[in-house]
Structure formats: structure tokens, C-alpha cells
Image (cartoon, rainbow, N blue to C red):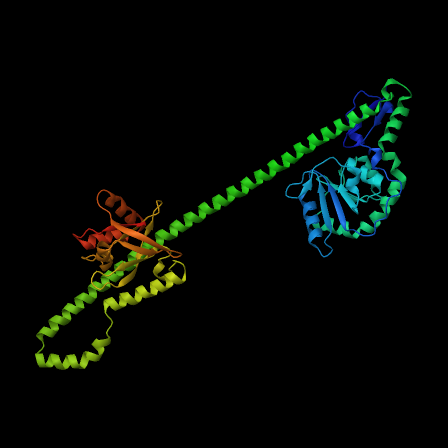
Length: 462
């Protein structure tokens, strides 16, 4: 009867469960023994934890975080990686004996645990399946039964890993020497092959193999392990990218919702602006009516009495506020708030719907600055309307732009040179529709303006 050999299993139990029809007494679990060149007869005694070697292609997040904390901590422990680790500077190669030199401890699982054991290096057994942490006399048998895969021990938090690595190192260093003395020979490849030969008692399954055959077998094992590690690394990368896609999708949805809220606030501000302009128009009309009444009253008074009354009222008339001065003061307040808050005006609920229009006076030649409601369009232009709250005549800045269309506007963060162009049919209808949809009060202005069609002006960057 031939002896059956099983290798590469996660645990010895997996080997038994996966070998249906094979006599258990004739079964040998080969495991992942270390090549003989890894063995040292007298391992060095390590006194403190200064350098850690991590051998893995799938380091879990909590372990990465713990190692980063150790590197940034007061002791500034040096950490190097051997394998494919996302986001870290690593070396990807097959482990060699010299890779373990100069390190005080190795963090790994699987066959690399045995490599470290035969060199007498303390092993912190932990990876994506969790693990027992520092190998000790108490957990060695259970860890070995799981083929040092980390299964069966559970996971730790990053803080718990830092605590275990720093506080448990002294005991782990002593235990590493004891485990080397007890198990180093047992985990060598040559010893495993001898056990395999003895179990076969000379039958063909235990026949001697040449050095070339052994070398070919080891190379094949390394290639297979490399392929498995590559697949696992790509799986982790895909999972990371899927997570990034979910994050970006949530961010875009949040921005969309914010834009909808901002659009709603803009509509409300435009409506409030229209209401304020309507109130100003009513105030203007009332002041004009009172001025007319005063003129009629003055016409009925005797000249002498009118002169005496004028002299008595002169100080008051000299300082009496006019509509123009009221509007000027109001505009000054709006302009100051606009410039102080990068284009946002809370007064009267204007919000971010205004721009500051610069225009050069036709008669005076003085530059004027006027806050006006604007609509920023997707093509990079702006629309403004010369409503004057529905007055029968156009505002003064309209005549200024007609005389000198090249001017500029302030948008809050920038001053933009623009050229003004009055919209004509059929573009006018579309432009006017934008204003009435954003602020229904503009439709009322057109009714008040009577025969005057409120001009719509397009401001294009130049």
C-alpha cells in the first residue's frame, strides 16, 4: 500500500476532510517546511524591539494602522514590508534567509512562520484571519494545528495590536529561543523528507528524488504561491476601488442636493428682491405725489408769505432727504455688504443673486457702481434687466451702457471685464422669460412700465 502525502492545507483537519477514501494511518501531512538554508544553529538574543519585518500580501487594515502608529510613536520603530501591500513601499520577492537578518521580529502567517522559527526570530502571527499574536508555549500547539494561518483566534483592534507588540516583545524574544531549540530541526525540509521516506518503508511513494527534481518542486511551489498571492492582492484592490466608487457616488449625490437647495434659496431671494423694488417704486410714486401737492399749495400762497415760509423752512429743506439720497445710501449699504461677503447680501434677502455693475456717466464722465439682479448663464454670460421697478423711464445706467458698452462687473470674488449687448427679438423673449421665471415680480414691473418694454442686456466676458 502506498503512503499518501497531502500538502498546502490550511489545517490538519482540512487535510483529513479533503482526503476521502484514503487510509488515515497511511496519511502524512507534509505542511510547508523551511528550506535548510534558513536554519541557524545559534540564533542571536534580541533585547529590544527596533525593527519589524512584515511578510504578507494581504495585511488587514487594523494591522497597517497599528504599524503606522509604531512608526510615528516616541520609539519610532522601523517597519519594512515584503510582499504586495497597497499604499506602502514594499519589496515583492520570494523570501530568502538574508531577508530576516537585522530584524528584531517578523509579523506573518503560514510557512514564513516556520522560516522565522528555524532562524530563531520572534514571530507575531497575525493577518487577515486574525491570529494568536506572539507565538508562545501556551498557543504554539493550537497555532500549529491551524498551520499558522491565524484562524481560530479572532481579530484585534489596532490599539490592542500596538499594546501586544510593545509589551509582549521581551517574553516573545525568550520564547523564540526556546521554540528554536525545540522545533527548529522538525520544521526543516530535509527532516520532513526523511519522515516521508520513513513512513513509506521503502515503497515507491518514498523513493529518493534528485536535487534537480527537488529544486523544480520548490520553484513550482513558489510560483503557485505567487499566483495565489497575486489573485488575493487584485481582489483587495478591486474591493478598495469599489469602496472609492461608493464614496464618490455619495459625494456627487450630496452636491446635487446642495445645488437644489441653493437654487431654491436663489428663487426666494429673487422674489424678495422683486418685492423690495416694488415697495421702492410705490415710495417713489408717493413722494412724487406729495411734491406735486406741495407745488400746488405753494402756487396758492401769496408771494410774500411764500418767501417768509421758504426762509423759515430753508434749514430743513437744505438737509431734507430726497429719494435719490435714500436710494444712494441704500445702494452704498448693499455694495459694502456685497464686497465684505464675497458677493453674498443678506439685506432684503438678496443672497448671491446680485452683481455690481460699473458704468460711465454719459454727461458727467464719472464711473457709477450699481447693484443689479443678474442671472448667470451656463455659457459664461450674465443677463440683467433695466426694470427700475416698473418706472416709465429706463434707469440711468441703461443710457450709460448704450453710450459705452465696454465695462465691468463684480461677481463677489472677481472683477470681470464685459461688453453689454441689448437683446432683440427673438432672443429678447427667451431672456425676459428667464427673469419672470426666477422672480415673478418682474412681470409686474412690465405692467407698471406701460408702453416701455423693459430692456434685457447680455453681459459677455471680453
